[in-house]
Every structure is written in structure tokens, then in C-alpha cells.
Length: 216
Image 1 (tube, rainbow, N blue to C red):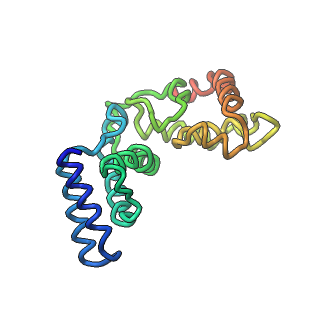
Image 2 (image 1 turned 120 degrees about the vertical axis):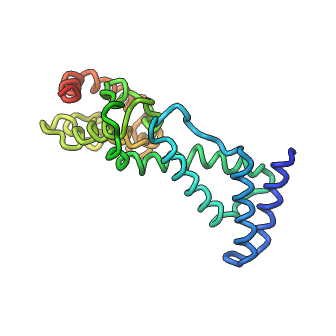
Image 3 (image 1 turned 60 degrees about the vertical axis):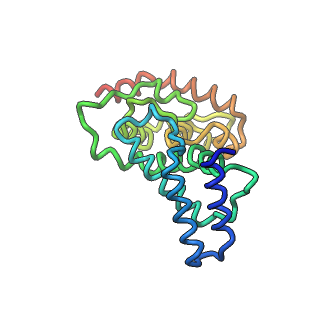
């Protein structure tokens, strides 16, 4: 165990020894969070994505992580290194949560010179939380608006497995909100392979309409 890991583990265990909301615990947590910041070892998930907005999302993710640490320090298991524990949560939970919640609102500050047209390839991402680096929030909102309004009713009426709920509109909006195929599969009770194949067929079927809308 290196010096940083040892220091963080000791600070975390010190915080656990004091009653919740006590002054002593708050002081110990402040030292822990300060040491985490100073360590320079916090992971930076998906560094090539969300250009122009990454730092805002990352800062929000860190705030969520630090709040979680303060509220749930008793959940820390000393058999793991503190950095293992928090970096796993930062990457797999809080960064994804922050990107989902912030992407729909960040579009107001988009620089028009940096805008790239959204292509069908962007919709084909298995997990659009891992979105194209050049895809700006305003363009994400553009395609989401088109899917939601569904002016001809085609997206909502095209479904698979005799389940109206498993329609193209639902799948596309779920994927663009950052949900994984596994999560969607569990929600609908339909195999991932079935949903993915249906989704790809729909993209091919609706590509002329999508291209027309995106180029207008």
C-alpha cells in the first residue's frame, strides 16, 4: 500500500469512528475530501467526450460523489482502497448521472461555430452516454424533440415482439438518455438481441426521414 492509499484509508476510518453529524465526523470528512482532491488520483471518465461541457459535467459528478461520501462513509469497506471505492462510483454512477441530468440544459451556451450535424451513426451508439465527442447538447435536444413529437406517428407505432411499449420512439429516447441495452431489456422483458436487431432495422427504415429532418 502506498502512502496516499494509507493516508486516505486512515482518514476514512477516522470518520467512521465518530457519530453521524457530529463535529468530529465533519472535521474528519473535510480532511478526507481535501486529501482526495490533493492526491490528484481522481479518475476522469470519458476524457475525449462532451467537448466544451466536460468540466461542467465532471464538477457536478464530483459534487455528487463528495456528498455521497459524507452521507455514506459508513458504507466504506476498509478491505478496499479508498480510491478504488470512489473512482468506481465516480465513473460508473456519478459521471453518468451528471451527464444525463446536465446535457438537456447545457445547450443554451453552445457556440454555433462548433456545431456538428447529428448523424445516424450517433443514434446507433449502444450507450449514448458514451456519445460522439462532437455531439453538442443542442443537437441532442434537436433529435430528442423530433422523436418526442413524432409528427407522423411512425416512431411510436412501430414496435417489436407484439408489445406496443417496445416501440422505436421508446428505445431511441431511452438510449439517448443514457440507458444501456441491459437496462432497457430488463424493463421490457425482451432479449437484448431482439431489441437491438429491431432498433437497427428501424434506423434503416427511418433514415430518409431522419436525414431530411437533420439537414433542414
